Length: 236
Image (spheres, rainbow, N blue to C red):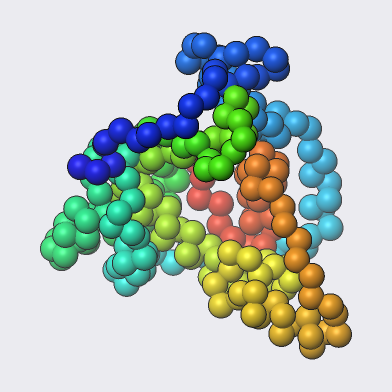
């Protein structure tokens, strides 16, 4: 299989963190964790969310076979699998059987109904990929960590992501000026919106490292609940 073959890595010294080389796995883990999760334990003032009005709670509709098939169709057959070694190609052949498809849908709905995310879905293999064209590979920022999760869990996450994005647009949860990463919105849509408002179009580039290290799931869930969306996390 192509994904298990070795990759030619650029010549580099040991990764440096706080002026010290990382020679052991615990040292390397601390360097990468503190670089990409720097905001995990940082205090955050959540009082800014008090201004949001609490909307009436809405019921969560069960997933359908169409949602599962649409999410699966968008998955690349070239993506590397997780610890279970089940690829998207395997999963697409499995769900071609109606009985298997129904079992997967029942499993996805049960996860949200019970509020429990199976341990199997949380298992992953972390791969550290060097970013191309860096002058030095001694800093953690010169690498991109990727977590390869088990495929079935990723499929349910994609179904959940599509549903959340639909609700965000339908119930005005997302800011109207947010165009990136939103379906039916693009750079072209942003340009049209700016012209209609008499604004000049500009481009702002933010480092993905800043966005990832500053992301706080707790803040997102508070906003999610205030919008009337159901909080289905009990044991995730």
